[in-house]
Structure formats: C-alpha cells, structure tokens
Image (cartoon, rainbow, N blue to C red):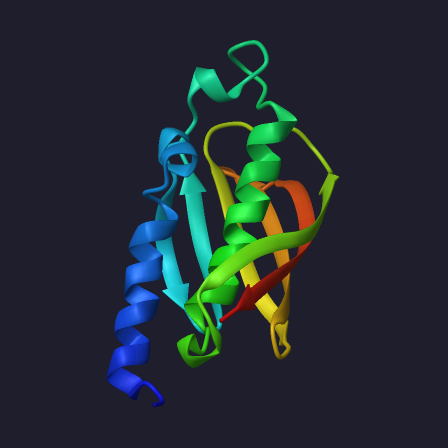
Length: 142
C-alpha cells in the first residue's frame, strides 16, 4: 500500500530531525537551515574539537559534512515507498580552500534512480568562500 502525500511529508520531516541527531553528526553541532525536495542547507558551527590546531578544520570534519549533506538532499525528496535502509556508496571530496568560522553545506539530489541516487554538494565558510565541493552516490533499499 502506497503512502499518502501527508505520510510522505511526515517521513521527510522525521528524517530532517534524525539526520542531525545521530551521535556523530550531533557531536559536530550540525543544524538544518533549509530542507526541501530541491535541496538542503546544513551548518556546522566552528568548534576547536573539529580542527587540527584550534584554527583549521580537519579534513574529516569537512568530509563528514559533505556526506551528511549529500544524504540529506536525497532524504529530503525521497519516496519512502521505495525503502528506508540506506548507505553511502561512494563519495568524492575536493578541498578548495581553508575555512574561517562556520561551515555551510548546500546539497541537491541531481538524479534519483530506482535505488541509487546522486547528490552534488558545496561547502562554504561563514564568509561565503568555497571550502570544498563533493559528489555522493547514496543507495536506499526496502
């Protein structure tokens, strides 16, 4: 039996909440600023525990945000009749500069397949300077 539009919307809202409440993502302080089928925007406030030296973000923190934002973009427009079990299949991160202040990721799902979905991600700092770009392949199955 297919979910109604209201049930689909309720599942998408649940995922919005769940994405930032997983232990690791929550430990980064990640918040959702925008969430919709056209894309998402997530913010990670600066914290020295995400850095190498108290000033420069560790590349793993940036990569974790790319992964989270790419997956969130898929969930934000997902058809929950097609499944709930998910994982990242591949991810590419291109580091383009250093960040000052918060990290802000925008992501959109550029292709939805039967169970494999593709996202493009852009990470900027608080000043709007590009920090990284990424792509993510995400799989969701029944």
